[in-house]
Image 1: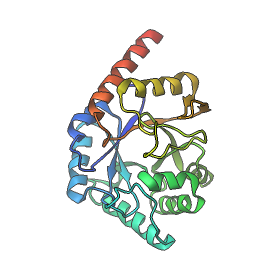
Image 2: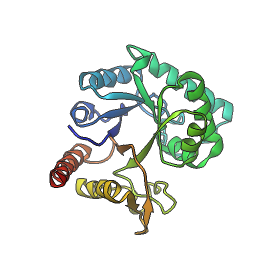
Image 3: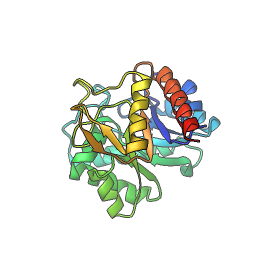
Image 4: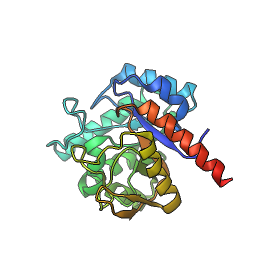
Length: 243
């Protein structure tokens, strides 16, 4: 349907999966640490298979209270054990381990993997040992990206269509102005700039370079279905003009 690879976070209790699945290419399913549980994983995996959507694991800090969106105090060994167990539990819900296409950290863990060498190293060590063939989704040239490439792991550069960027290429803090793009047209404008210019305009109105193999839309954002439908319609028109 669409030539761009769109991924959406799912299995987080918002019950939007059935409507979104036909519109996307990849799904990132919560492993239960910030939301969801084994029955939810199975349900969303089943929907993904029906719609030929590739399946990804979405591990996080073990912090359901804050939906995994704040960095928590946790030892290296505790975090490593948590991530390993999340992924193991996730894979056990699949019909076959090969159904796992990618791994994408969630929330604060995702952001910390971009800027924190030690946190990124934990993820890389686990994937290298247990899932060496699996794709990793992360921001281009962040710590996780660089370490994964240096170990010969498979990495997709990810860009966000519903989030604002800082001048350093990281995502703006959610509580700040411009952190969340709330309508489909703004999201398409961001996509257009990435496709045409390989750049994105930051919350400070500066242009920065960006590379993307896949584009994320958050399943918990307001009006996500309507926004995605509009974005894809605008993208379809964009393709027609280029023919």
